[in-house]
Image 1 (tube, rainbow, N blue to C red):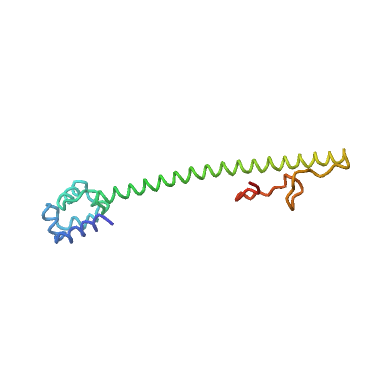
Image 2 (cartoon, helix red, strand yellow):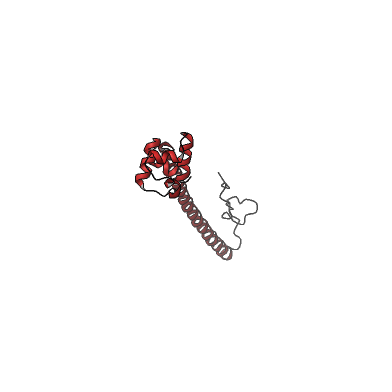
Length: 153
């Protein structure tokens, strides 16, 4: 809301015309309307004092309490955004760790398969490993992990 609109609203609420306000404050006739709300701090102070409202109300249309409430809401929103940012950072680090673990698992699987191949070439009649292999797995390292649940307890 513009300053001029707020002044008009205050005049209406107090049953005062703008001309009566200008007269009571010794302002020139039509000076408030001509200013279009762009007036000196001294004039705004006089108007605020006349209507017994804070100058902030003339500039914003809000009481001090309303402005304080808005500031409190903004601070709360900033706090929530900061918490979200911290959680996002932790998630990012967790994903990096998960990727590293997947890479290490892939390397271990490759190493295991190489060693298994070497062993079979060196000892042709090597029995299968005694570790149970799940259906669809080629070795004990063939674990599918999608991040939602572990394939074992």
